Image (cartoon, rainbow, N blue to C red):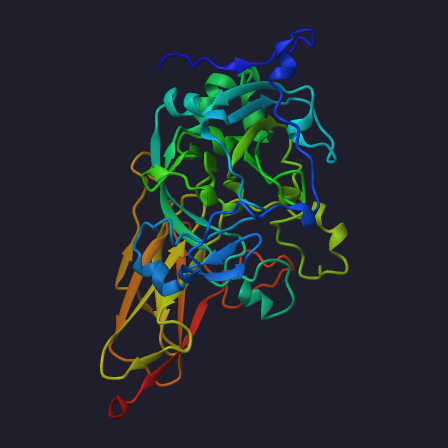
Length: 432
């Protein structure tokens, strides 16, 4: 492929083009000044809505699992931290920079003057690198937070178990773009792959920071089998505004918080993003940490990256009445991070006394990388269910990772992957 042409800034401070290539300056604004009046109209009947402003909602579990391996965009869960920006495709630029010096925690990655910026238009991104399509499941780190909230108070949207969905995503591999544009020193590549991170920042407004931001290790980005892409299509169509139009990063195998929407800045840097959402959010804090002592705890906890192993029963739902005269098909999803596949799902219909494997597990690896970036949809048909029984499901991934029997509480309410339980009622045949 021909080397791409792009706009760049010079390291020479006398170069008049340098200031022109700086990303737009963003400022933090107060929560009371966030403008939601231009948000898209939502089909709220498709969702269990947890919050209107910002809009956070999940589909009912039967709707989610019955939609099949690929989730339609109109029932894909909605996760937002602020108003949905209205961005013009033809004017949008993505700025890419390399920062080799150490920066302070109080300093935003994209505001540093010593970054050598490159600027790519959407036309550049859509035409100058090969278009790759991957299927990947995104799951909010707070999925199943309701189970931890039952133990003790947690901070965050009280998601149930539907903050997860799967789509096909299309766009260029980020490693291809960075190899051509980022000027990574070849003689220092080993150290950088070991130690550096890639920071992503959105063209949006949130009250916690100047914009939404996050980061992942450089080695994940540059791994050709890591499948990190800059996606401008979802399920074969241009991204909708709520899903990141005009462009977002997709980081398969990681928590959804790392797949930044409305992408505007990409910085290769020696440390993690300084964003609120990397430094002071999406971490499993010590169980002794609560609202009263959380301020001093953030720096000692690592930021979340790969998903843990997860399994959820989607049908029957909790306290659903099932007939006694017919077999019952139990359906659900299972997922793990890092490209690990689900190799076994076990189901108990007697409260955990006995277990049987699922009859069917559907999960396909990526055709190029061979990694399992999507969920496994599974089914188990049983001849009958006793009255007032508890159905339990648990999964094992290809590295032998298992789920804990009970929830492990943390203040932020993330990564709950305890055995999934539903209480099922069966109506005697003579009452049907």
